[in-house]
Length: 113
Length: 113
Image (tube, each protein chain N blue to C red):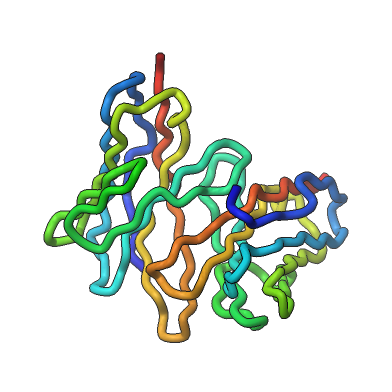
């Protein structure tokens, strides 16, 4: 399973766009890239998932370059409620359909007023 | 709300005791995974159950065991509790496969004293 590297922490202000980049140099051909958000004392919550190019949903965008060795989660116009830990995960489906999420330490995003 | 419920929400146990944590998965999901999250760390994969059988295991000793029932609910059992077992235990349900979203419960906070 590919290891991921992301910044330990980031600071931002309300209304700004936040971009969190994740490095995954050893990503395999059939790996997906997934981002989760976690608030204190709650379970992680799925934000977005992609395989290549760009994916956008109602809360975020995910940019994946052609070599797929990195990805960038983009949060438009953050608010105080976006203060959380963000995890970048890379994983694959094994032959027996066992799929486990491998979390790193995540990026702690602090949004200031 | 993810539809995944865990019980109890908080628990205090004494070292050496045994504990059982429970998880009701989201309707239709046949795969349940358990994670341990120590304070300040990302969740660590314990094991996964698919159709009532263990389908992948992380680096946890045998005193961590589980069950999945025909209705896809699940239990995590930990024997001979140690102080280091104090953590947030998270249950996630999903369909099998790397391209599916995992839904997490709110977790059970276990404190071993």
